[in-house]
Length: 386
Image 1: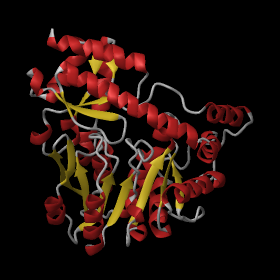
Image 2: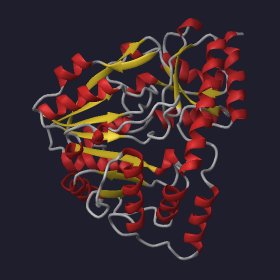
Image 3: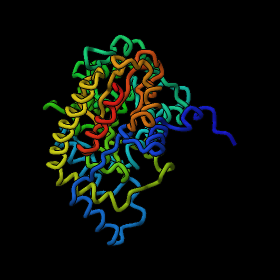
Image 4: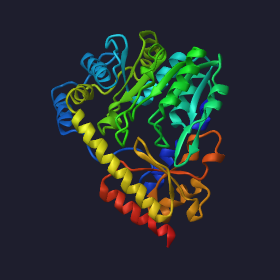
């Protein structure tokens, strides 16, 4: 049987396409946002101990109790947000399942879901799974950064809106939304009784001494916000697929209702290892953030020296670059050519939008890689000007 029409646009992802091109041409993959170094050694040892110790069967449906407690403790320490680990924290198979479970569990068919554009592609696919109608509010260029189009926000969110999906720090642009932007979102969501699904997986990758602020901390927002994060980006374990969602008990229960029929449970031996990391390895996370900031500076300066226009990255693993000064106006075509032409893979920002025109030139490079990998990638990109 053919794929149902609402999922046809999502048959393949830009990450899969670019990664396959990287493999085909032996290119350095700066397209997909995964680190190429491991997380804390004691966390890895804890996982091995769980596996060899026989913890290889189903974990509890809501997640291992000690991990739910560790997540609650972590959010209390880092953000001043207090959640009941028994009713307000749910462990998921990565943040992607948390997103899908939340939208499927909370969005009635035909209801509107507002996303900030550009948007991580899983938001659109999960909205389609739920039968929702996607609406977008764009970021707009502001010097070498981006800011929220607040007029578009006010015009788009309405009483038809069920959920607004927020992502800050933002993938793919590296933007960290300002306090004023967060307040604008909060105000319009309170006015129209909208639930906020806040994807904060890059909460610990905010640079230059800037703090991360969750929208759930704003007045009137804890009771309408589901906050999503994961071990993947925090502890360099994207393959473990340990995520979590926290928020009001009734919203978490709706997410769990859908989630339990997606994967049921997962990551049994890894959940205790992540518990250990959340409780003891935050100094490792802080050092990793400083190292990432240095890598951001390394690749940003190198891209400028080659001739790219470079947008400032305030957080995440990514930097957005403008190849127009080099004579390339189509970012998607450039990304399809790069693996064979110079041996580097990137992704076009236009893959993350509905309205491609303002974004059609931009390309995204991931910098969460070893220094020698970044240095070699830069050397290859320099041949664009030969």
